[in-house]
Length: 125
Length: 244
Image (cartoon, rainbow over all chains, first blue to last red; front, side, top):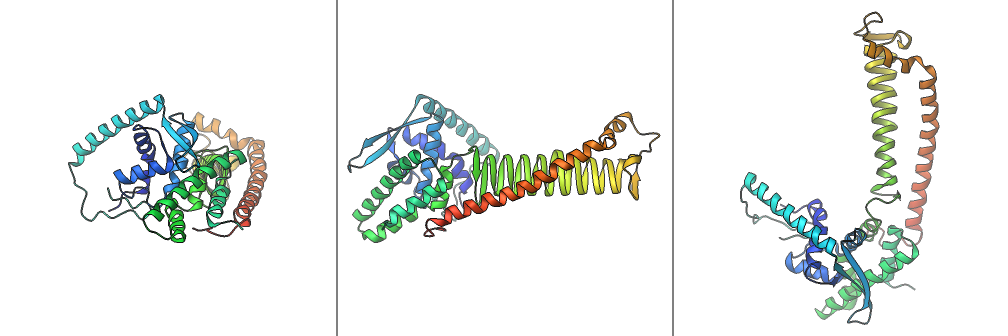
């Protein structure tokens, strides 16, 4: 069984907003955070985080600024905006409601032992 | 000579097709990510050459990253591979307001398989006007036409006209050699009779077809030209990593 690319792509916005709700961060660090919480979630597609971040910025859910990082290189930092916090809160509610509905209908089902990493993302949640 | 990192970023930006200033910002951001990754892999004991390749592998295909950077629905999206999405979308598969492609879905769709409000193509499906080899929709003019108002070589519809016309009502002036009809001219309901005006006004169908033929031909030529140009653009600078 695999967690599909479609499922992941559709929820990457929420995952990134959640990461940024813990404090300003930059792309690479966000990937590390995601990989810590959900190992391998972006295993072979780390670069695909940037289109999502740029889209979130266009929607004014996050803001970015360039600063000199620890390495001396220019680094783009992102922070969540009030609008982003509201969107994240809404998404959390949506998830909670969806989870409740799905659990009610389908019942609790543990992730099976046979769960295999997705070939693209290597998801092992 | 460019190093492997620069060549990877060149390729990403080639597919992203962004204005120069924006492209530079993207390059700087991705470069920072990759360099950090290489450093971290190095700290874990991986040889630098191997770390570079691993960082690139984990960063993803330049084509995937580049295309995603184009944004969800730009004004114009032309692709030589994959699905183009935009107000004007051109590609092997296209989704847009004006969609042109092998498979096109849009308000105005034109292609081998076209679906939309107005569609033209080999197999065309449409809610309003349809023109093509095989057409299904509202007002259809096609080799095989299936629609509310259908005209063509073989027409099946509420109102049908053609070489072989099968309909609820085949108007007398549109009947071909073979006609199968439920209503006759004497007992046809007024609504159908008034719809038949579309057939009676020859100028309507003539003009409709006269507009569609050049639009279709120009669209196919334009589509082919733009796709070839895009394919050349993405291949011209560097074949390296083209499928990586």
